[in-house]
Length: 290
Image (cartoon, rainbow, N blue to C red; front, side, top):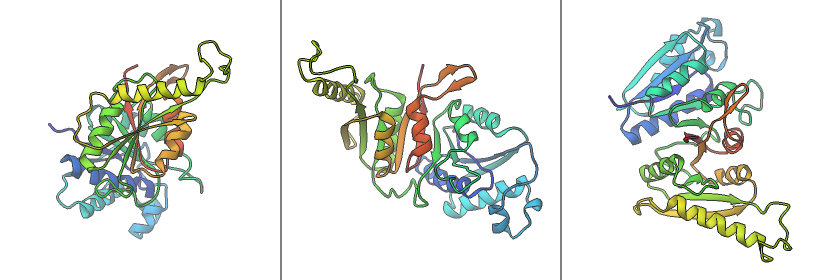
């Protein structure tokens, strides 16, 4: 069977915006859309959906949440196959399990204050660290959409190892579907301890590190087909800051997700973590082999 695009919905406006984006993406890919609400609570605790349904929040149920999301998806994409499910369990566990049978997992940002657009909800962050398929977190403005790109480019961050990665392949396929250029970005820095007096630098430490970044880009992109336009860009600076800056002119930011064992379970690397918190556009975290 064709694996669907799965969206975690919770009745909030960010999750409904995630439904919009996922409906466009499912149409681009020719895939079904699966909408999942997971919670240990049967009743809805927020106010956004209650306002839309003209009902007191204490009367909104889980079925209302998924039904509203499904109607929104079908109104946006009438030909789309949409299914729904309500799971009585913690959303983190439910969405990670759903990712085993999904082509793509999509969530919105969620905040309980005026900083909702700046802070990533704990559910999305936890799931991003454990999902088995690529995960998209819908960040940025209300004009984010997959079918009609606003900025006309997909950006992918290339790691220092300079190898073709799952993230690069995913970004290439997304750019091809959207018929937009792919911009591959490699950040580089000269370590503080290296000076022009370093015997291995021959007086040009910055030039050498920049050339290494150029070589890494070439290596990572060397096996890509030539049927889309690819722009290569090296930028001096921290990778997190460089990619967040690039996200302001992108429709999609793609980063690799290398999960590292920690005392309290798997954690994402700093670059993916920073992108999820601060990107100005939707972010895709693509699992990479450790």
